[in-house]
Image (cartoon, rainbow, N blue to C red; front, side, top):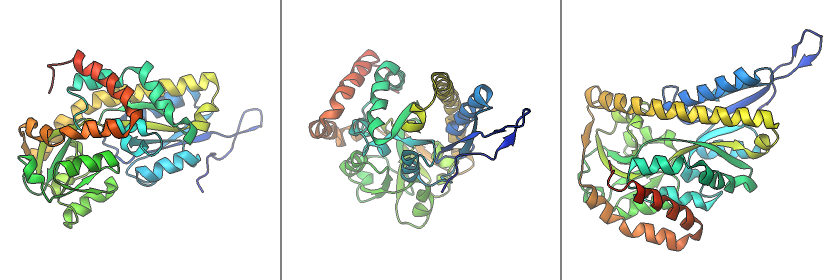
Length: 329
């Protein structure tokens, strides 16, 4: 069992104090923008509340994959974890909307919708009764296909085994493209591609370098089929048990972590693409996006018909899509 208390230490008056250890899990490496954002999270909390709390970061799935880490957060064995929104669909099906292909029509609309805290706080509260509480979001770019062979059109995906996130909507999307969806933990992808268990995956550019997928998959296609945020998830009981002052500090730390991650993301994507192309021999393909959009054009309506709980958030996002129309990237 994971202990939550640090060893006691004597104070000047002879009493014993104990710092509460805050454990934060993520699947990414120490080089990833999310880890850099969480360092800011740690530093701010310890600068403000260092006499009470020590924040420990566990990258590289050290505490298990995202599904396992969420379960540990739910039980209170750990306090925070970073996960993609598809992992929250079983806790609150409103999160299914983010797995919808081509939900956002531009990056500007995506950022504006995610930074609409008044609205998103209501979405984040939807998991409270399951023991979980989202506190902020992180940008992980657009999701794109990469594989051992080139994907120039959706037809090239036919019959290919493609790893997707463990989400019914992502599975439906991949199948609509003609691929055979293969959900699995992110940490298993490298070996699965290397051994031919799958033909490829879909993710952002950093997966090629930070996770070395560019060593085993040499073709990266900018299908831009999803913009799925990662989120920082807290144990609800822990968060709710904080004093007002402490809660303010943790919320400020979460926002600072997002601000840092967003800046680092932009820099790291450019670096990752350059490294993958020049050092790993990855070829980047810019396909006709309309051909990809046509393949999944019915998936949005099918999802809206099947899940009434996503309709309000979907409509809210459409307002931002209209506001930023013509700014597609």
